[in-house]
Length: 197
Image (cartoon, rainbow, N blue to C red):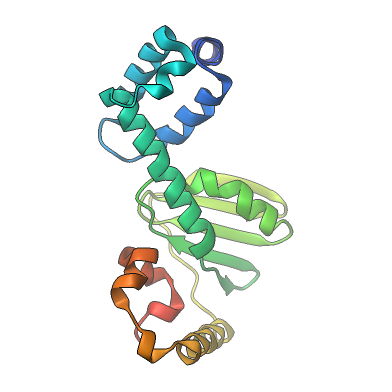
């Protein structure tokens, strides 16, 4: 019910803070179990405590939503620097595997960055795709999707990138544990330089 939803949104803005609406929208993208119930109790307690609710870090619900929001922001930041596109025809395509539904949070960055290009970012874990075509974008949920094949030119580009990556690497300083700290292993399958030949 849009009317009731607007009333709740206005109440959150007035009784807690304007920032809290955005904060809760981000938390809602979390895929942790019981997120929604913790968010509900956060809001109920926030109506009583006001903006001071953020100080009650020993409260289970406050702690949960603060950690969920931090987790989502951390994952968003990670993916802003690691999304790799490949070209198929006139479209740039990227496949990602995030733990949370972060595609809506990535949208503005890539829409501004690729303002005049057609592209798609596909979240294969949550079956969500950000698609931009002719300056317009949409976020769609898809049951299944068949990715276009990589062109020969793109294969050559990826091979050159892998050769460059291997060439600039310092073998004496190779440290797999350190690499996994900065780039979790679950992300490697979408990186051309990390794939085996």
